[in-house]
Length: 352
Ligand code: UD1
Image: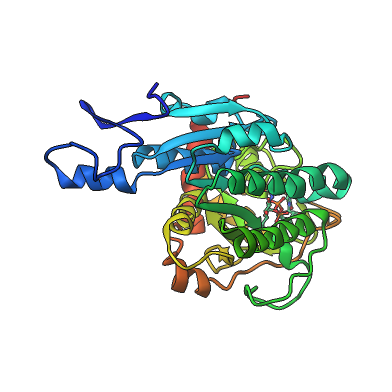
């Protein structure tokens, strides 16, 4: 494993991390020197989870130094397979401020993905999700402030828009969350903005809409709908739709969400801001089941059940702010992403 203060960009080319370009005696390729200057040390909280592991992997492949903090409640070591020798892994919880100060030390950017991500779980366990999603985020911000990290990029959620019927949801709308999870994410956003204004920690909140892709765990009733549907379709089983199936979501593929995170970490002049991260296109649950049936070549049997408490009905993002200020535009279509996920799930046995 590469040491924390020593990293190699290409075989045989290594420099101590702290060397500044004015003191560094590297002779030769300016592109290499530039790459070193642009490389960052990053912490990914929840870095062994679904989205966090994709961010960590992309950072590693781009030559950055990456530390992952994960309590492995939802994250898996198998999500780091293929690049685990290039990340430093700290096992621990964002509810532990002391551990966080160790984890953030020396990092320039923190990608804060650790969270309890399920809306219905938050409805059943609001105090527990409050501790993780609000208190845990405050701990991350405090650690970033103490460590003088440059920027915190936070995984917020479309759930903050709640039951406002206006579509598409724009960042200018007043948040009206209807679940503890939505309340927690918008509260955390307020903390981010205050830290940006008060303490000089740059902060950016990304309001993820419904992210899907490889490594999303289908194994619990609290899992994301696409992971559950694809898992069942591949196993030739039917699916349950809560409600009449006209509820809709703006599904976005995980690789696009990684792009958004990298832009949010590097763009200047966006501290204290929030951005919708989505495709700007909605798909109903009925359409999703039909699309999946076409991909697997078999009609998916659908059972309808009562709508879940706390669920919003429709979700569709206005993506113009992310395009204008982050230069972000999702590239992967829903059907294209689903095809890739079906292939992945058909070839990957469930691992713990
Ligand atoms: C999801 C994410 C949340 C994210 C939010 C952003 C998960 C678990 N939740 O919440 O972290 O912040 O998007 O918008 O990834 N459904 C079914 N059948 C099922 C499962 C779900 O019909 O078997 C329905 C739900 O009732 C809901 C819709 O699918 O109407 C989406 O549910 P879900 O995938 O859990 O996502 P969100 O609650 O939107």
